[in-house]
Length: 575
Image 1 (cartoon, rainbow, N blue to C red):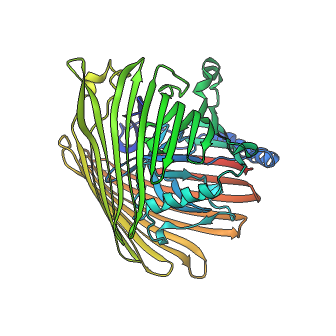
Image 2: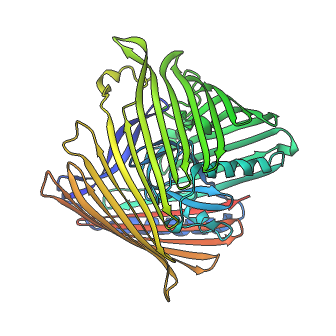
Image 3: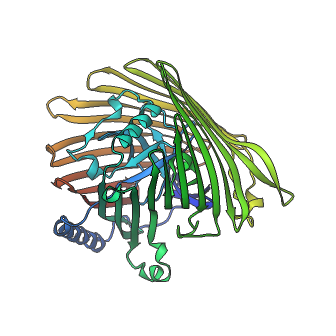
């Protein structure tokens, strides 16, 4: 029998060994299982769901939901890596958005998750640069009638630099204005299967106060508390196992061109280092932006404050407009420590250039400046990652993108010095990727991508390709319909996945629904086993009031001998 296996893959972020649970298809030893889920268990979770809905209705005037903001930390040929304060609200298959004024633009589909980052595939042919801000908006908020939604499958590409300039201009226009907004949320996650049943709850509070009482002080915060049933003993021993303070900082505007932050915050100009607990300074001089950061990294085990993990760095950026668009260049230097011993020292360089009217170049490079040889620290100049992409738009309805990336492993020599000798693998992984987006006629769009990834240790390169066709106004039914297919071929797997999705407003601006079906058919090359799954998903969104919304999502996975269910409920209020 074959099943979905969550394989822990170690990656390093901010000196942390992050266990990314990558869902993959692997042979599983046949076991005798009860294929029917106990009826009493299902009844228990049905009752829990009803109780939650009742509670949601009762609290709808008090509770609200927060969105999550992330920063693109690395771009490869096949994927974009986005760093969040937490990804607990995000699920594989969700969409991350760019923001343009009050418009949400779908930009990235989530493929894999860790606790603080996600890996995704670009939707359409947009170029996403490092430090680009993306936002995850739960299904409920995405469907709000007060937000204009743009379907990227029918949208022409927008330059990332142009996007940044528009956002910057918007902030400048609001400069000096006192404004406070925030969100509170209550979420419930229920996972049901023939061998595991669990439920967890999450409560979020976020606040953004600009120019408090028309002063030079501003502040922002994002705090979350999450737990599973029966987890209170662990929480009582360490509250930070459930309580996460992702952002808690105060800003003071020294003058019209400079400011200083104090607290925990991610600096978008050096997003690849993650959150910093300490001081951050920024100064603008005409086309240049300069900044410096000094503080510490959050604890790698529970995200609490850890003064032993000191870090400091500086950056300089330059941004100008030319006849074809914009040209942006930035370089940053950073030193990360553990008990005042260097953990990692590196430099980062990125360049974005509108070479011609419909031609854009983006490249980024990360260079390690510190290493250990014979247990002694040595200065070095080691190119650990590079990425180059070229986007071309020959005419309005067609966009093309070709990209190449190469990346080596990254090491934190002090934090993991007891295990570093066993993982020093400098082999480089390389990849090529091609993407296209074409809109032949009104309401119809066609897109796809193909990727090729390889390294010396692989028995054979990995190849994947996917394509979709979207019709946004199906005649008579007035339903948006999308058909998609994905081909995957690796050293151990060869298979296809097909999908069909329908979405429609049942009561315009108040109630909407979405129905999706997927079929998975994988063949394992090293065994005679196969994996075949049928997945169905149904979602409802209810706009209770102007700033209050409730969403519900049910997903069922059917597999020979097993089935899995997931129920997600979320209550939202903005203020």
